[in-house]
Amino acid sequence: MAKHAQSFVCQNCGAAYRRWQGKCDACGEWNTIAEENAAARAPGRPPRKGRLFALEPLAGEAHEAPRLSSGLPELDRVIGGGFVRGSVLLVGGDPGIGKSTLLIEAAAALARAGHRAVYISGEEAVAQVRLRAERLALSEASVELAAETSVEDILATLSDGATPRLVVIDSIQTMWTDAVDSAPGTVTQVRGAAQALIRFAKRSGAAVILVGHVTKEGQIAGPRVIEHMVDAVLSFEGEGSHQFRILRAVKNRFGPTDEIGVFEMTGTGLRQVANPSELFLSDRDLGVPGTAVFAGIEGTRPVLVEIQALVAPSALGTPRRAVVGWDQNRLSMVLAVLEAHCGVRLATHDVYLNVAGGLRIQEPACDLAAAAALVSSLANAPLPADAVYFGEVSLSGAVRPVPHSTARLKEAAKLGFARAIVPEAGREPAADVALALTAVGALTSLVSDIAARGVPPRRAQARMARQDG
Ligand code: TYD
Ligand code: MG
Image (spheres, rainbow, N blue to C red):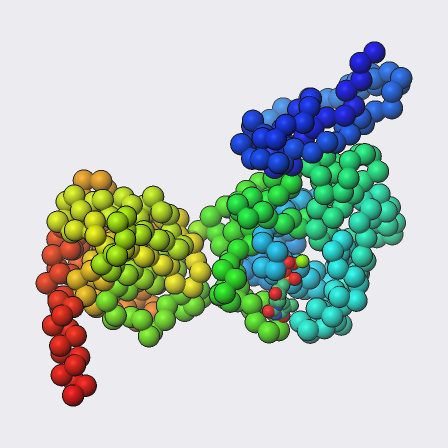
């Protein structure tokens, strides 16, 4: 009898092979295939006969999932109003981004509210976790701690006594279960451990949070294969050099996926940022050539962000196009439209575009602000410091309307802006918005407006020299 207990599994995507090979055919990664023992059932035992269960109609009594507030409004916003009983949440992010900090704070907030919260660390010793809690001034919260990695031991402990309301497992990659033979950290182990913990959550009604590390490509390593098993996947991101951390829902069975939570990493833990626009705008840069303010929307919340562009003559045969915080393809598209329809020559220029504050913008509504910043830098023409921009640019050079204009305009007015440059077609009868609106139908008209304000670089330098002398 041929036995194929041994199989080779790609650690990146989970594809299984009969024999080892260097490259995974499924995801194209090299050197990710490792040997794993897939035998789960004892040999010789016959398969169990199925048990009958009742099928239910779709119509029936449904009740709103009861939620438990995490005590952190920014976290609640992303998960959709609080932890759902019996739900499992995967929180991914780069090492060092602040996942453990966020979750110990959430656990402490729940414990303070009188709920039983358990924090299991597979990476740090209890003393280390305590040290962090001390730094965060949370030591008096009655969170129950343990440094454990065996899923069976953890489940036995959790099932003993009152069911906790929240269990944090930090991280799922360090957990291992006896039910699977492979080494800890392999896809099979991660999947097996997650399955056991998910079963515990559904059975007991505790909310379970799994922490997962992310690979350099931005994928949740190994845990990628458990993304479909959990109820929600959150990603905690930020630029290492910036203080801002953004929590985003990638998948959410119980809430929206377009909300973001904004935090700032301080010396004493994560500070919640209720009004993110303040973070992403710096007074210093406004009114400087190459800076435009984009009135964006993240989920249901308007956010004003500074878009910075630098267009400079290139010394290279192939000029550079670098972008941080926005889509490279969108930048290429906006540059192509500027060249093709607006007579802007960029073929001999390097182009850099940066979204201030480490935010990553995904909206096409940013096209107009990006174009304005680029032209402003090229023409050395500062944009009005009291203006915001939004609108999508089509390949024909037309400026197209975008949703939520009123919310964007209201946020801009609230933060002291006086004008908005908006798409023509989407002009709403914004009755109560105290902003002067300039509607643009085509990108060309915006470009000529900006260029008309420009100072040629040489004359600007001469003027500065005169001022110095
Ligand atoms: P941590 O939560 O351990 O990250 P993760 O669990 O995602 O790997 O956070 C680590 C970083 O956060 C570390 O570089 C130090 C920084 N930090 C602060 O700046 N202030 C603080 O109060 C804490 C606890 C951490
Ligand atoms: Mg950690």
